[in-house]
Image 1 (cartoon, rainbow, N blue to C red):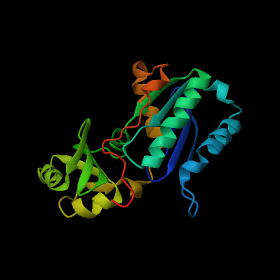
Image 2: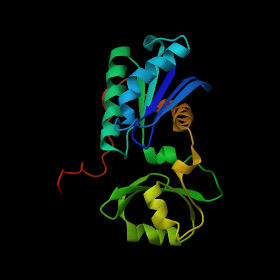
Image 3: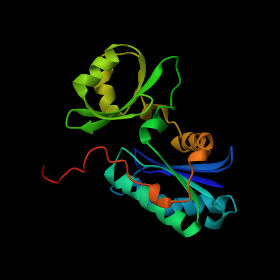
Image 4: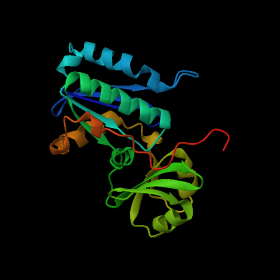
Length: 210
């Protein structure tokens, strides 16, 4: 039984599957001042109960390891590591950039852009390229070789350069299902070593007041 979850982006996405068979998903949004990752554990419990399962039925866990919200990344990896350690599950960490590369399919290669602040973008072009200056990314986009997938902040900047662009938030894609499909493709990479689940911090956490 595969459990996936993601608290690194705009919402919490939780999925449950038996091989390629999707059993259920949950999507959680912020509630007032309460961040959506707060509901992760209770929602996992609910999803298991809805399918007459217990934590002991979970054999695989996959999670988004970033980049994204620093709080969300920590929540994802901590919960996944603790559960995998206690349950003896196999684990897999997947970048949010790879997950988002699959929300839209066109004839062009996907180029994923997330706001990295400081006039930079986190970039995916068939792999994680890192945090790149906005001006340099503009040159990549102007080449018109890509279908751009991004967040709302990057959309405001790059929609002036290309028409082949979409903000992933506007598509309402269920990222838990996408993560399930990635795990099924990468079964050989699953490992029982929960220590391999480490946050993908491309840049250091912001310092308050800086």
